[in-house]
Image 1 (spheres, rainbow, N blue to C red):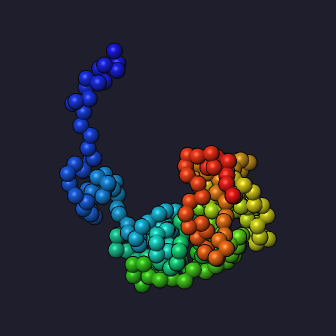
Image 2: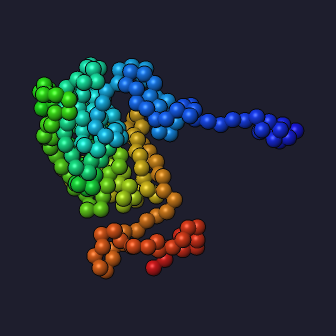
Image 3: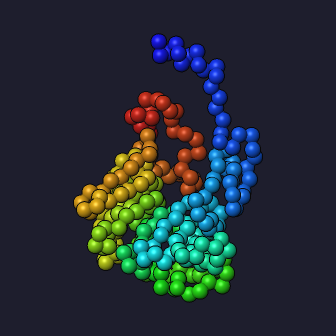
Length: 248
């Protein structure tokens, strides 16, 4: 009976995006139409960063709001809601898009992405300088930089409650990496499932939760001709026996 009722009603169903037939349009103080047909109507003021804003992180002391975008890290004053308000830009080629502040907001720990293959710890001391304008360039002050492996790419990280250890998921090598900020070294590097993408720490600091997004367990393959991209063609089809069991 339910199936018949649904089938009968299908002729009357109409699916459409919220924007209907409207084209994409940016309206800073109103309703913006996104390219996918969704509508963006902010509840409060709108701030701007560089292109492709991937992540935003507020500092615990309430002073800063940072945005991680293609150009680097944009530092905005958390209390200044003017879209044209002065802000700092910490330039960064090939940036990664995850980070965490220490409890006192004096340091920002970030993934160094493809450029550093580990993590960086930045001092926020110079952020108190008044920016000359919007996205005024400011050199990042590295406190610590720890490299793990030339293939490593930390995609997400969390800080231990005592702020000594950084737990990072390496989505490239499919590992969980533990960095010791005191010794400035890597103390653990273990497999973490297929493409570990995100990591969280329980409130009591006793359990680490890793979210995986992958279906296949990829291996690092180096071509004899030295091509850094590895294989030029897929090693096997999917789905296939080779995809399940591997192939040489």
